[in-house]
Length: 290
Ligand code: HEM
Ligand SMILES: Nc1cccc2nccn12
Image (cartoon, rainbow, N blue to C red; front, top):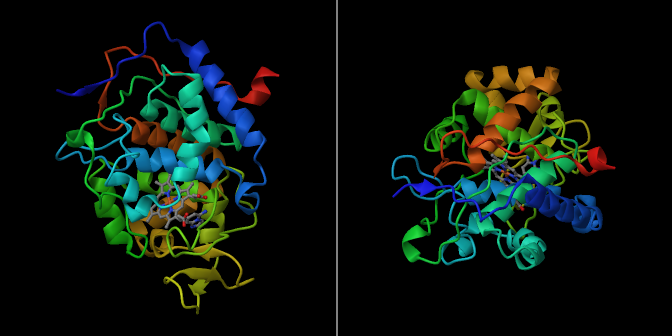
């Protein structure tokens, strides 16, 4: 049957806020990780890759079963490096044995966005761990960075997202960096990679050229030759149906935040059915609780 959200007995917002606060504290203790990027980008990517395997046509994949620890998903090249995010969160799976992997991994993404200055992300618990082969999505369901705008549009159609949501979601590339050992692409992308802002869109509208190097085809900025964009990033300004939203978000960070919040919340819940009237949690940031 459908993947129905099943909340652990008696757990409420208070319990999940405690997990949120533990994850936030550990992020704070590791700000110098990955050359100063911290864990923000890593945790957002873990939440996204846990969810982005969803296929609306076959109703498979998505974050519900927490299957990324299993073969073949764990060895999908697109997930290279994400064991760092899973290992970072593992101590909380032990400390809070009632939380599922899918809930923990998606919650980690919510903490990373909110604690790096991004918008509040409404979040609902109830994902259930699976140990069955039938619940593990096949590899190849995550996107290829070497492609063009038509590919990007078609890819996200499988997840049920339109042009505006696609551009909003890609704004998460304001966090973190590329790692040649993971993807063959080489960061850093911009002056800051541990703050959630609309800077990705502002920089994207600048001028870029193909980098001359022996690695994957990627772009570097004309001004300093020291920052990067992926082909699929540049694709957002090559297609008019994307470019109009890149300009919208570059000009209005609040609008980007509002649209990202909705699209990211939807992404994390792809394939999951919630009992009618299940209200999302809105977590307080650490700052709001001081
Ligand atoms: C066309 C779709 C996308 C493509 C092709 C793509 C590709 C990539 C690649 C190649 C990396 C570098 C990985 C590494 O070398 O470690 C990366 C990093 C990242 N991606 Fe995407 N991505 C896409 C969409 C998204 C979405 C929808 C989100 C979240 C909403 C996202 C969030 C991130 C983050 C936060 C990082 C930094 C990870 C880190 O610092 O370890 N990406 N992406
Ligand atoms: N941070 C980051 C990760 C992956 C791709 C990308 N493009 C621009 C920035 N960026």
